[in-house]
Image 1 (spheres, protein in one colour):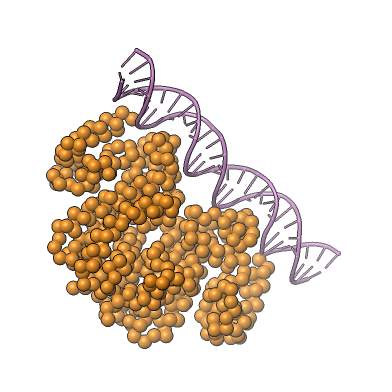
Image 2 (cartoon, rainbow over the protein chains, first blue to last red):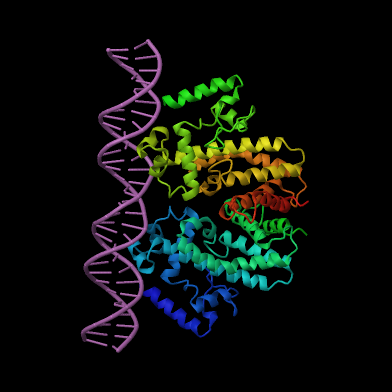
Length: 237
Length: 237
DNA sequence: GAAACTACCAAGCACTTGCTTGGTTGGCAA
DNA sequence: TTGCCAACCAAGCAAGTGCTTGGTAGTTTC
């Protein structure tokens, strides 16, 4: 496809010289909102570094669609034909970009992890007290789990077992720094428990499970209120 | 099904006159430990009622193996041939007992729900204060999640999406009374949050997620300590 | 302008899947 | 004995699966 190659090369050259304003936000798919492509957009910097695929490339679109489908239907119930159809190519063509279906999952998890970590690091760095940092973490992960900031984030928990042991090890290494942010915040906090790693594990389950019952667009409970409730449990005022 | 009907009727007559000692325990598969078949074993009563299948029947063995395999490998990655092989019959013979693979999952979830509810109700009824009741609930669900009391319990959370909407509705109705126990305990408790239903949802995620990281046989953290930590978070002393 | 390369298509292969079909066996009742 | 029926086997079907192969249009490189 000429269009894809064209666009990706244009983008890469623009980003290579540090012109981040030329890169559209990949947080809100349909909008070129100016505030998203701010001068210090950390996600755009990841794309420029080559750590995250260019959002308009076929590869990135495959990963994005795959992550969303894996989240919706599960890895096993999503076929390579489903993914290909979503992107607009034939199923066989997928294997020009990835060597196997499992590699798609692994790469999707990698990008999702990097993306989420970058967003959360920025938010934590912008707060002063441990409790406000924890609130930011909770908020970030809730937004990610519900597809508001990092589409497909919840495959990290839900489809973990669909990964081969080798791939699990790779993702685990990547995820370490993400979890480290949480652990450091909990360490600085005077919470109900001593062990920061245990706190993180407990809150991880709580937040991940909201995927099964919480609807962000629902009227009875807002994302702010949910954030506040979880904060209240893991860091009583 | 001659064998099943036979055994269950034998059991029914025995239990009908209150002779629960004639009923084998289905908690510990390989043992006829006398303390398990106590005079008021609530699980044995369920079997006697016909609400739970006779543990020795092919049907119950199919459900048990299926639940365990679904838990280990996931519903989609478990084939009917896997289940049949575990029980020792051919794959086609499964469809003499169940009309579809999904029905196996639904029935397994039904039995697991009934089993867990019965165990937890008994434990809660044996405590006085709300906080001790909550501790019992946490302990019960942790034991269930880790296969110590109700094998295959965690499919209720992990394989929820593998169920058709119709089946989901059926299980949901059954699960209501189980969740109701939790909600009532939280209602009586003076916890960090007001909403008992929200408390339950948050703690449900925490406990279910322990399946992914906690090992009961591990030395660093015991099940008692884990119970106590979770209790400390959701009901600070 | 020839060669090499990228991104894709069209077709289909090898295999697995849930489930079906027709038949056999063994126990039980009349 | 005869008939019945639950429980199971043996074989295989139809649909779907991940992935491969051979080829082509367009672009880039030398």
